[in-house]
Length: 319
Image 1 (cartoon, rainbow, N blue to C red):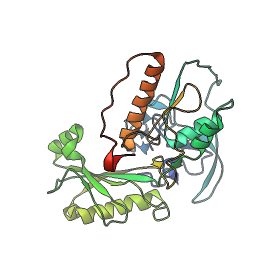
Image 2: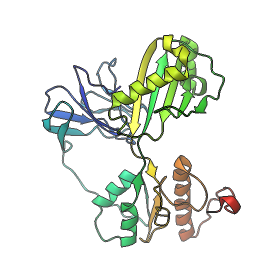
Image 3: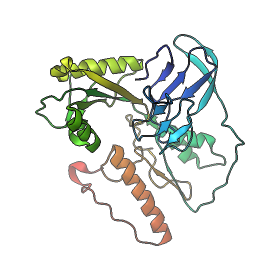
């Protein structure tokens, strides 16, 4: 749940979270090294480690990878100074010598979220075209999103879709009944008679919910408003995923948004922030831009491209 206890202190918000044992001079990043989700403590586990609720990576208490898909350990930090609410950290280099390897390729397709893309460019050497650098610098991220998932000892009546959009709440904008749609949760519900409910806040204001506890407690309170019968159920477990890496689309950003092809020879882009020639968004935009990048390589190599089916970009849908 990422709420501080007598055994562990947690700092940060969004997808920049850190764990530190009280008075320790070391801290551990809770950013999964697989795809950047926030990992959670496994209090009941023998090693008191961490796990990623997004894709299942597991880590020992010292951050070492126990099982994939992550391949790198959680990052370690030295504590320079701390107060009750803040901690100052400096990164600790990984054990063993750092080696560099030059990769030569005919094409490079950079596919990352906006923070990752900016970080890649900040580490790059050479002189890329000014237009490309400017486009990357102007990329923005949206307000953060949060997902709260709750396990209960009983099921409940629900007359709507298993995924339902909601309005009128401070935080929650949709609800998903995981024990009705995903096999492992369905099996658990059949075995126990319980339920697994997830609330989403795809774009919330950080000033209104400055801590992880604020988010989780608000989700729980609003869940009992949405499903009043759960107020008398036994809450078995709850967890929170909170990140800030959705692509932002501020007014006026479209004309200079990067496309798949760039002014840098052999450099292509893919991601949910890429300007597309047909209507799409979010995961569909990320996948479609990747297919466009692959097709661009195929075209330059003189091989057959893959057809992409979309709506006709004419009339009211014309871009």
